[in-house]
Image 1 (tube, rainbow, N blue to C red):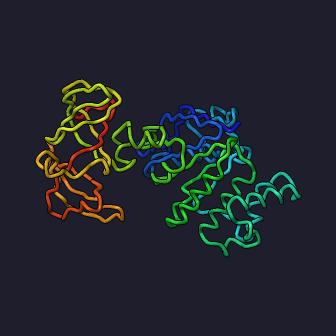
Image 2 (image 1 turned 60 degrees about the vertical axis):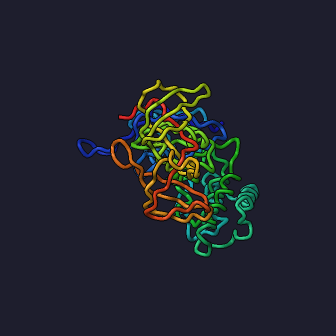
Image 3 (image 1 turned 45 degrees about the vertical axis):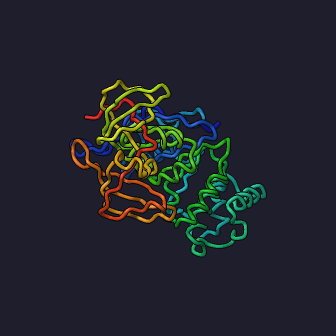
Length: 365
């Protein structure tokens, strides 16, 4: 059994006015074979959670169970070497004097001597990361991507209950990141739980079953990638995941299919919602950059008037930044438009909203 149960953990560094709360009453469950990504800005607490699971941090409160065994809690702190937990770091942490095979073999030699079974397991691990031809090389003879694959093989070879990834792809280029993502996906096992720390939302959404979005030492939302993208729970999640635009709006009328009519910046449109707000309620509405369309000739007068400030070519379209007039001053928007919809800087571009989401339980001030 490789499940992880985290209950009400807290951690504060320092004391007095300069104290920093890294974790505040954080709880989550990760089932056997589960893959959870911890996503958030720097200082959000994601690395502290990873270090606590690994046994590299003590807790001020709460408990952590791995495989049904309490490894951190009141009066309990199982040392890292006694936890069946492997860690893949961003900096690889390879022994320079050891070959690739010897680096992968190292965790297996802690409690036993080198033997045929160990040799077999190392060979299998190297095949799994496509390094079976490089076992006799040394780390300084490898590329950055190859070094990261060695670190992954070393983490897998001991059949750990948990594999922890601490921003392992941050220093790799785009193509190497894609290659490593495929290998990490291949490394999944029904008997191993994975916790993956990153500030890269694309990695988190692509790899994980569920993503915990953190800020200020708290989990703002723990959900599937689809739910986070389509139905964010807070303004922080909406802006951090997908860079959604946030508009102050008012409910005009409710519809029967989980949608409401809203008005924002003088423009009326339909939005999805989880909780059905009462007509007249002030709410926050979020719109993904791709949730806009350019107004057609027949509707040009009815769209949001976006004053274009910047236009960035994105390969399959344009990312447009600009502002629309709001009740409390200009509102900045980021909009994705197709290749045939390029506006010019300084132009007034009329937009319609094709897809929007009302944030639950949040009333705009």
